[in-house]
Length: 426
Image (cartoon, rainbow, N blue to C red; front, side, top):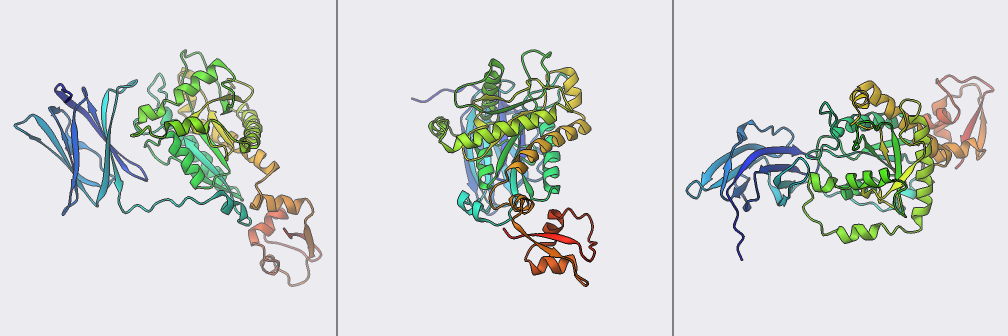
């Protein structure tokens, strides 16, 4: 039976680039049928929307960073339908789906344009990571929300997605400056990533730790303070934690996920295996250290790590935390969260807490584990003789110049005759 659709209008049109695709979102007054197809020589993507009016100027769209060179629109079928043509820089694979109204959004038609030439990410197994010698500790940093999902919105219209991206970038910079660490930003710009995809990116990056950064809102503007959350195997530790997890887990519905075929897999994923026990303990200990540091720069909403069923934390092989840096719904806290200097202080606090926990028991095969092993006595001693240089000593013992300085606490290249240097043998 054919469904009859009432006449509608396209009241908004947004184009958002991301590393894996360009997303086009049509805001509709009500649902409408659509068709999508591609043409070649030159490459084009064509969208026909039935019984619709176009109330936006497609010529005003910002196309920087996308595969689209130009957008055109016209009427067809005696003026009843709208045709929108995207002139492409290169061939793409389009996928379309519709989203029902939710929160601030009405009906939406979403077109995802995937670059045909984009190289597929190589999923490297965990076993490969653990055998690498003196590797960096990988910290995956996830700025929550993004794109059509702004997250919480403050009293002066400050968006959570913008605040947490600033904190995430500051945090990544701190880890990248620290010897033995490497940061991976899950979201680098203002675009949407599905919750499950965020954990996939962390896993593909072979992350040792996953940090999801947020700045949420609550039902009342009086609530304030930072909180840290880990995954729960037995339900939420408080009503606030449960409410917050349910709210965060709606992100896929707001931002737009085209298929729910993995829903049963996601439910099965909550049945965490034995490896989760160790990682959960690590997460809780790391969370307590982060809270301790956050308490030095911000009021704490809760003084202990809470737990709830956050979908973005469901990675049993990666210790994970969701960090609420404050409540953007509180006017005073919104002002602080919008301040770049305060964002930097929050990033520094998170960095100190995470670094402290990793330093105490670094991953096997990592540079940090090698340093710790050297500090614990698994080493030989070299006594400086006339003519010795640090670079020659490093080459002789097959260690890097930087590692030799780090394990001996040297701040310069200067050494003296008779000085003893620790040379790790692990």
